[in-house]
Amino acid sequence: MEKLPEITVNRLSIYRRYVKSLLKKGKLLVTSEKLGKKMHFKPSQIRRDLSYVGQFGERGKGYNVKKLSQGLDKTLGLDRKWQVALVGAGNLGRALSAYPGFRQHGFKISVIFDNSPTKIGKTWLGVEIRDIKQMPKVIKEKKIKIAIIAVPYFSAQQAADILMRSGVKAILNFAPYKLAVPEGLKLKNIDLSTELQSLSCFLTK
Amino acid sequence: MEKLPEITVNRLSIYRRYVKSLLKKGKLLVTSEKLGKKMHFKPSQIRRDLSYVGQFGERGKGYNVKKLSQGLDKTLGLDRKWQVALVGAGNLGRALSAYPGFRQHGFKISVIFDNSPTKIGKTWLGVEIRDIKQMPKVIKEKKIKIAIIAVPYFSAQQAADILMRSGVKAILNFAPYKLAVPEGLKLKNIDLSTELQSLSCFLTK
Image (cartoon, rainbow over all chains, first blue to last red; front, side, top):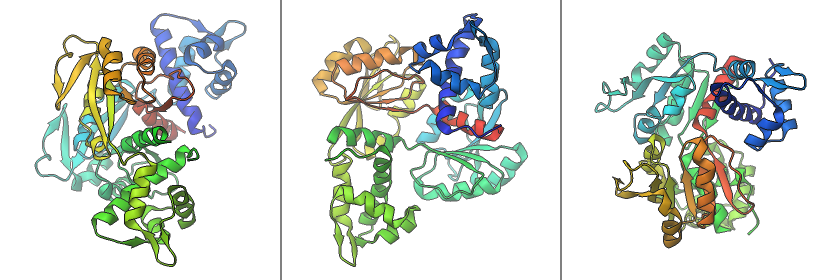
């Protein structure tokens, strides 16, 4: 499959959510016009994006909802379950470990790592907090490919380095630090404070 | 001041964090080369970005750390405190209300709104959860300009509409829904599940 642009992936993810709700309601067909109206995208944009996913249109009738839903799952890698490692058991880590949206989409935080003796050995929602020193061993054993970094900025690069050496191929980084990562590793950064700063910057002008 | 591109604001925010750490250590001057090396940006990029902030360079010596820090604060609107309204007292709302990074950067969640009778009247970390029906009144009284939406997707547009009518000018939206907002309102979207989906999509290829 050709490489999908990030922005297309984001739109597919939005389409998928709506298509799932149609499926739940028992709808069999949906047109790109209907999808566009509901989600504030141009129908032409939706048709172009969905052409990446497969051919689910029935001429003059619209898309087959069930097949479209399955196609979106497959394209987004959501036709399977993903184990996720969470590094950092601070406030943000706790928030993320309790976030219901991950599991709803097939992502299960199956292990948490921290370096604090007061946290190691504890259990959050059934998931054990392990010593960060065991990260390579545990990640290899569990064959985990996706990790979330939620440590302070000064520990982020070290955490990323260990994750990469352990076989992790995709990282969602919440630490406010520009990680150096090799080609072939997928990195996404979310900095919650920076997001608010772009709002305050806007209001200041 | 001219309108700064989003990506520049994001970089300024990263620079600011590092400059603050230099200030704490008592450093007086820093060169763009040093900044670049520490943060993995090209010095030329840093010089260009910082030219938006002001003139803090001392020829042949580098930037004056203290003045640079103040300039970054001012440009990013962080030389003052911002009151923030949080809409949605679910799991994500609770996580966000406990997130220490907001307050560290001058953002204080000063009121939380929800429509659940079991939550209204409760207090989270000293902040009262109010009935969503009181949103216009409370937001106008407190003159709040920034809001965070953390409600389910099907309630997001309604929440945004009420916020806008109440005088909010900037919204950070965590609901997985493409909000329709007028020109002149600043909207930032964060969809945590979508971020993970772009990782799983990458791993699927």
